Length: 406
Image (cartoon, rainbow, N blue to C red):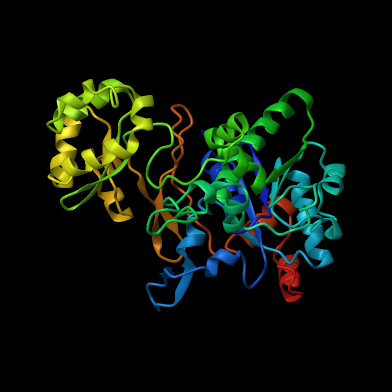
């Protein structure tokens, strides 16, 4: 048994924010029906390299990008622009518990697939819309993309090296953090709405905006601005309020040292051969270290450069001083902790037999995530889903296929 085994999700989303939400729902056990455009499907199927390859022909399959966000779903191809296709989706929505879509403002209304239209036939439907800027405000009609949202939401103003140093300037995150965070928040909202439905018997509309989420994710940086009236700036790998808490050079690379309190700093100073630093009034307390950052950091760097990353890591871990390597992704999956936690999984795949996937971080003792359903091929489940849920027989499906509806 999985937590959402009794939930049916109709996924009209594509690319990342919506699919990330529905993949999480699938991991929790929901049956997710991913509706895609016949012939092409989700844009990310072609966002490569790398691509899966057909083991028999070598022909390119789906991109890794698509595989990352569509585990466990059932792919159904339906032409939403056709009246017959719209009717199929309405019939599926009538049975669904949740619908997730990320079309532009009003994009589904012309098809009769907006919340008001579908709630009329299924009042229990939880309908989640994901857009760049939400359903109101002057920017509501605009398309929203992760990169621009990172910039507009403040993330790039605090990410990157200081403007006064070489390489300084705004920098985006290495992943589509606005999309992923929105998918995560959308999942939370959907689960909350389902719980509310247990009490009221009614579904509701969820308005998720990438910009809203990005601003909320600024957390302490946003509050720093609201409380002080001053916008925080970029600090590179340093921390605005904790010192030392950054990457330090070693003889063969870099190591993260993340001192969280004054006691840890005293141990660090001792391990580096300078116990007197802990008694220096400029460094004893964190607030003093922040004030004298420009003096302390070069002193620390001079000592960390005397050791290799491995030597320093071993020494600091022995003293229980928080530290860690800066891993490339191959080293992440080779790490003993990642292996002990089984962060790489294998899931079934219709083309290649199995395909690797990254484990869900959701660990539930009574309803654990299982890895029995991989990312679907385009339209892999069209006949099965429409036959089971809508009662369409082979002749009806053949007629729809001849018309290009599925």
